[in-house]
Length: 88
Image 1 (cartoon, rainbow, N blue to C red):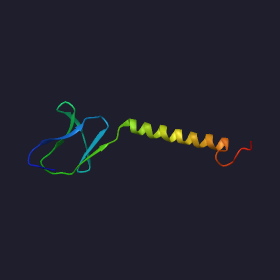
Image 2 (image 1 turned 120 degrees about the vertical axis):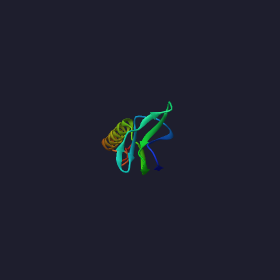
Image 3 (image 1 turned 135 degrees about the vertical axis):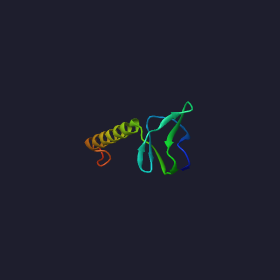
Image 4 (image 1 turned 180 degrees about the horizontal axis):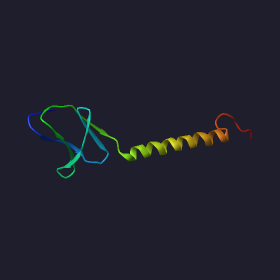
């Protein structure tokens, strides 16, 4: 973005505490603006803005999925399925 004065960049995306912003590769605060949107304060000049959605729930979801998949593999290996067939 290019700004001639101190500005508030408002993004038409719903605010969530999981949003992270970087201005010129430096951490910046994401603010709640206009009720439910998000914004970032921009100093005068040319800047590169990066927004990344990284909520804690995503981290916990990945951990739970990894645990569940590991448990499934252990149970399947213990049962011998599908590597051996049971004789009826």
